[in-house]
Length: 340
Image: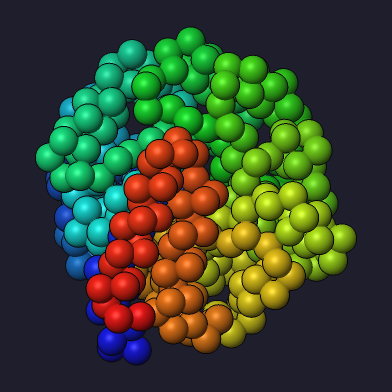
C-alpha cells in the first residue's frame, strides 16, 4: 500500500462532495475560535480531535453548527475559503465543487453580497496562486426549514456568482422530506443550476427516489442506502446518475457501522458511477488522499483502478468539456509516467 499511497498522493484529482465549513482544518478552526472566545469550540488544535468525535449524526450536526458559528464576517469567510483551497492544492486536487451554505452566514449577520464577494475573491486567488479551480454548490440546510430554502434560492438565483454551478440540500434527512424543497430546486434549475441533493445517507432508498423524481437530481450526495433497492441501483446505473460516496464520513456519523460493511463494492458491481469524496475531512480525521486509499482497499484496486476512480469524478463533474478533457489527460499522463 506504500507505493499506492505515494501514487494517490501525486494523482491529479477532482472532488465533488466536500463542505465549506466542514473543510476547516484544526489550525483554522482554532484560529477562528481564538477570535471568538464566546464559542464553545476549543481554541487548541489538539483538543479539537476529541471535540470532533461524534455520538451519532445528530451530534455531528450539533458540532458542525458550532463551527459554522465561528464564521462571523466576510474576512472569516475569505480566510476559510482560501485556506481550504491551499489544503486541496497540497493533495493535488485540481478541481473541486465546494458545498457552501450561504444561509448559515447570512442569518448570522453577514450581508449576502459581502458573503458572495468573499468566496469569489478567494476562488479567483486560489486559481491564480495555487492552481486549484473551485466551483460552488449552494446548499439548503434542511434542518433550518423552508425559510432557509427561500433564502438560499434567492441568493443563488439573484446574486449567482460566476463560480456557482449547482444547488443542493444537506443536513439531516430524518424528519426532513425531500419533496417539500421541489419549488426551490425548480427555481434553481430554471436559472441554469444543476441539482445535487444529499439523499439516502441516514434514510432508505425512498429518499433517493424522492430526490430523483421531485428534485430532478443529477447526482446524489452519499446515496448509501441505494443498495437496498435493486431497481434503484439499476436506474442509477442505466442513467449514469453518479453517487458521491464518502466512506469515512459514513462511519463517523454512524450511517454505516464499519468500513467492511460499506456498500461501495455493491454500488460498483451494479454498474453505478461512483466518485470518492471526503465530505467534512478535518472533522472526520481524513482527507481525499485517505479516502482514495480506503476505496482502493474496499475495491481491491491497483494504481490503474485508482486512476479510473479519479476519472469518474471528472466525468461526473460540472466542468466544461474542455476542462474535463484536460484533467482526464493529466490523470492519464501521470499514470503512464508512474508506469501503471
